[in-house]
Length: 147
Image 1 (tube, one colour):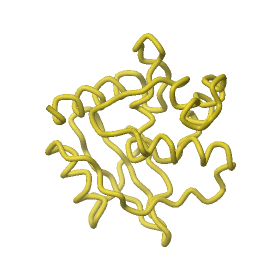
Image 2: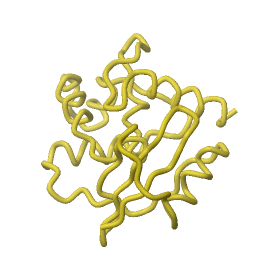
Image 3: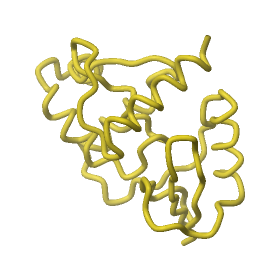
């Protein structure tokens, strides 16, 4: 396992990468050595307004339902948002908004699997592992970059 930190304008991310891919993203934790390699390049590109590339993510140990939700979430286009209920409908579960939210709360690799792009039905920003400030900053950065 390799752990490294990457500083964004909104704070610091610490990534842990194992032999099969990214295993964890933490917000504003204790500093680690600077992140290097493909994930550092990907985050630099993200800061420059590009979507993150499809680098390997290791979701081993994530329950099957959560895995399904995270994979559906990963397909939300850069610069857009969707609702919890809409994400549930995309999985064939039209009444699963709350379960979708609970699954997203267990996302071990936020930002990379963009759970910040999931908002309330009225567009309101709800819980996010990094805090609503991070969620707002990520959404705004992507919307401005996607223009």
